[in-house]
Length: 188
Image 1 (spheres, one colour):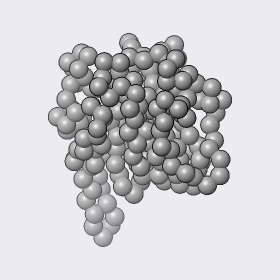
Image 2: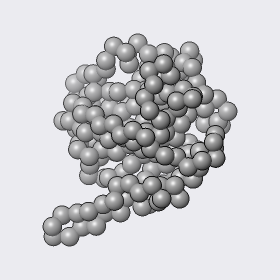
Image 3: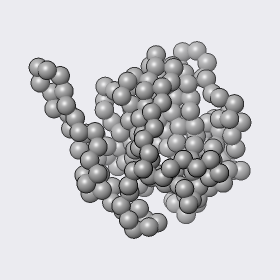
Image 4: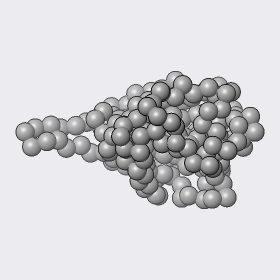
């Protein structure tokens, strides 16, 4: 597995090795030992990240989900990937003590490029579907907890994410379209 650092500390792009032949291809999409060696320990606990929940979503073109996060003690790290289609995936640093607090990073994740994004606790996360549809998989380091969930509105002007242009309208549910601004959201 190859690792690519991003400008935001702890946020990493992972690229699994793909073995191709006449039959098709094979890839080890996740290995806990390899992941631990690449990512290291959680700075808050000095323990390795362990995944406790897998989620799978299906979205049509133009669907925007996010920007979501969970607050401590249920803060989630997420390892995200696309197995069908393509999305523009975004993480926003919401760690108040970070030198990149309020900054964002975006990357296209697709079934074709096989890239994964490791989003440690302390980041808000969202994506927009670029292809006709997309299947999005993610592992989390904490179980979902409704009482600790937070959201920042996707088009917040203080963050100013450069979302890609898509054909048609952006489709956002009511909860995401009325989420907090970055300045009023609870952060880490």
